[in-house]
Structure formats: structure tokens, C-alpha cells
Image (cartoon, rainbow, N blue to C red; front, side, top):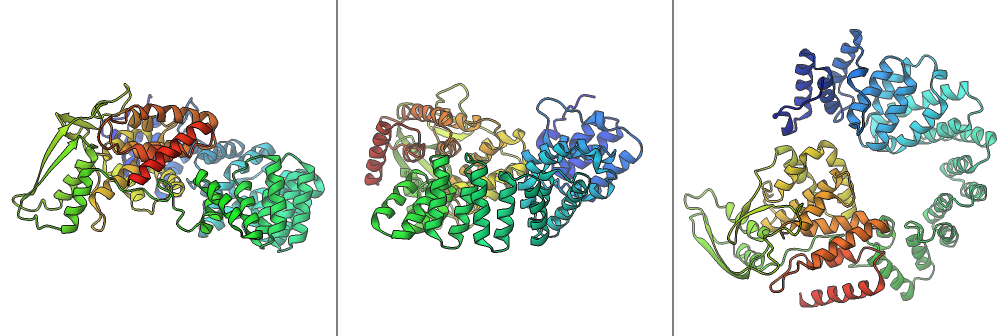
Length: 596
């Protein structure tokens, strides 16, 4: 039966509601629909005993459920995970591990690996599991293993080690299985067992992987000299692979051996010029050896041009006091005339509980979010029988008209009655608003937010995108300690980060829609994230740069432009822009900073 969602289901049910929908659909014989919603619930908690118990009870009845979780184009990962689980229950572990590995590679943050703890005791014959299936499986799940914690991690590692050990016993010549077994033992911190497995793998096949395995074991034992020897052997076995030299450099750096670390990083950079890990590491080592102004100047220049490079931030930023960069390390506050007045009002803290009004005249129509921030501030006094009012006069509408979109796919966040704006969308679902709030209250740093947004986005689907647009104009209630304008700004950034993580395309279509839509604060967040996503991909940088050129054309002829500074800072973080354009942007940015 074709899976058709009801109107209520489109309101994004909670996992508990998904489970209720599953039970109802199952009782009605709509099995594909039922398993879809069970899969949605399990994607939030793969170890939930009630949900798994219901699935197991169903399979124990003898029903063949595989036809109801079909492999189709654009498969939903949660449905494919349930298909893998069903394969395991019918003892087809080769298909189970193969499919689950594909799912976990896409969604490593969902702890589906807990299922292996259930599967391992049921595997009667490991010969039925293809060696290549397990190599691919482990190649995709290492990150997921490393995300696990506590007792859950210990149980999963024990199950994985048991499966690998059985396979090694039946395939004594399969060197990569021994290499993987050594890797799992290291994660268990069983150094002796890890070394024994690594030594077997190396004897079976002296290659880059097995040499690195030996190096890692010696490193775990604290034997730097022997570890370095095997890192170098790995380099000789595969001269085109820089990863071993990076690991060697890191090991030396951890032990303050700057000269040796520098040589290793230089070797890595020779193999792969411009490597984003090697170059800041080289700059750091050079500085630690000399500690002079010239090298510090090189570090400063590199960091400004590569502020989103995590390695540069880790090593170089601590050497540069006061090096926080706008839109990377913090979000600059809005500077509209409306907001400047609002700051003054908030500082004076007038008693508006008994009513009153704030009268404001501005020369040019400003971003509607600036007015929304003023309204949010006044809403704090809404308990009064005569709530305060905003009397707003706007003298001019700038050109190009910020109320108009510049493309058909441009977002229309506001409905205008002349110059007065009201949110164009209804209030968002609580699930979307809660997700945005969770990100908004965390300390801002662009790389951290992008990572956390990816984790939070697992609780959402692309169907939540309209809600994320609605949050931009309907923010949740602000915490007491934060100003209305800063809260609205952070909410909008958080919503845009989540849009980017939910979007299947780059450049992200929702973010492009904001850039091409009505002119408002979310444009700042959109250009910030677009530039972050594009860095290091010349083709993507070119596409984003073309978007930025279109934004330049909508800078108003008169009045304040709220997005100019964010646009310039973001644009300058694209390494592939030509030198002439970079020089022009730097001068423009400098002029803006001097005016402020």
C-alpha cells in the first residue's frame, strides 16, 4: 500500500506519536506506513525496548516484513536501518551489516551500532559474512563508534571485537581483518591485544595501513622512537599518502619536539600543497622555534584568511590575543537607528507597565527585524491593561525597494501594508522552535554551531523547513538576561544554520532563497553560512561569489545597509577570489570599520 501521510502527520509527530501512528497503521493492515513511522521513532532512540519489542513480536509471528521496507530511489535512512534490522532477525547478517554500514556512514550520530550487541550472539556461522562486507562496514562506522560513550560504548566495542575475532579465526590470511581488530582493541585500550593483532596484519602484508597500525600501537605504548619508525615506513610504502606524516607531526608536537614535527608537516605539505592541517601546523612549529615578530605576522595573516580552519583556530588563535573575528567567533550587534534608540530605551528602563508609547521617526525604511525587535521589547509589558505602543514614522523607502524579492524563489517573510511589516507566515511548530532555541542558547563559534546544528537537525526533516522560515519572524520567548534584538538575531542565525544542515544541496537552496528574498537580517546569517560551506571548494566558492555579487546590486543608494559588513567579511573568507577583488573588498571593509 502506498505510504500517504495525513494532515496531522505533517505537523511532525514526536517519536512517541510516531509509535502510536505505527500501531494504528499496523492494526489497519497498512504495513509500509506502519514501518515508516516505527523507523522514524527508532531513529531517535535505536535501543528503545518497547519499540524494538513490538518489531520483534511482529517478526516472531512469521510475517515477512522485508517487502514493506523496500529499497527505492532516495531511500530514507531510518527505513533502511529497519530493513537491516529485519535482515539480522532472519539471520542474513551479510546483508544486515552491509546495509547498516551504509546507513551509519550517512548518519554516524544515530547510535544504530547498539543493534550489533543483539546480533553478535546470534551469528552462528561467520563464514556466511563476506570479508569485503565487513571491511566496508567498519570503514563507515568508525566515527559512530567514537561518538559513543560510557557503558553503551563498552558493549558495542565488545560485540564488534567478538565478531572480528571470529572472522579472523576462520580467515587467518585476511590481514585487513586483523588490522581492524587491532583498531577495535585500541579503542578498548587493550594495548597488548591491539599490538598482537597489528603485528599479525603487518606480517601478512607490509603495506601503508598495517605500518600505520604498528605505529599507533607503539604510540599507545609510549614508544615514540619505534612509532616514528613505522610512520616513516608507511611513507615509504605509499609515497603519495600524506596522512602518516601528519600523524607523525602530531605525535612529535604532542611531545614538544618542534623541529621533528616541522619536518613531518613539511613532508605532508609537499605531498599535498596547501593542506589545511599541515600549513597551520608548520606556521605554529616555526613560531615555537623562533618566537619572532615576522613569524607571528605570518600567523596573523593566515588566520585572518582561514579563520574557519579548525586546526588554525586550535593552534594559532591562542597566539593572537584579541583575534576574534566577526561572524566567525561572534555575531556583531545590529546597528540600525531603531536598534540604537532601543538600546537607549532599554538602558533607561522606563516604567511601561501602565502603558505609554515610544515615538520614533527614521529617515529610511530599515530591516523589518529591527522593528520586530522593538515590538518584542514592548511585549514584555503586555501584562498591562494598556500595553505600550510604538508610534513609528518612516520618511522614505530606499532604492532598490527592500520589500521586494529579487528572484522568483526569494523568501517573502513579511507582509507589508505600505511601510508597516507583519510576519507573513503562521507561527512555527513547537518542535522546530525548540530545536532553534537549543542552538541559539549555545556559545557562538561558526564551526561549533555548524557541527551542533548537524546534530540537532537529526530531530527534524526537510518538511520542517517552512517552520524554520517562520521562526525567523516568530521567535520563541527570549531568556530574561538577553536583549530582544540580540535574541532575535541569534534565533535567526540558529534557524539558518539548521536550514543549511537540512538542505540536501550546496549552495543551500533555503539560504539562497533568503538572499534573493526581501531584505532583512537573516541575509546576514545566510551569507555567513554560505561562505563557510563553500570554503575549500573552488567551484562552490565561485557559485557563492556570484550570489554575493547580486547582493551588492541591492545595497540601497541611501540610508544604512545592514548586510554590507557581513557580506564583506564572508566574501573575504573565500580563498579562490582573485587578488584585485580581494583588495577592493578589503578597502571597502576597512572603510566601514572606520565609520563605526
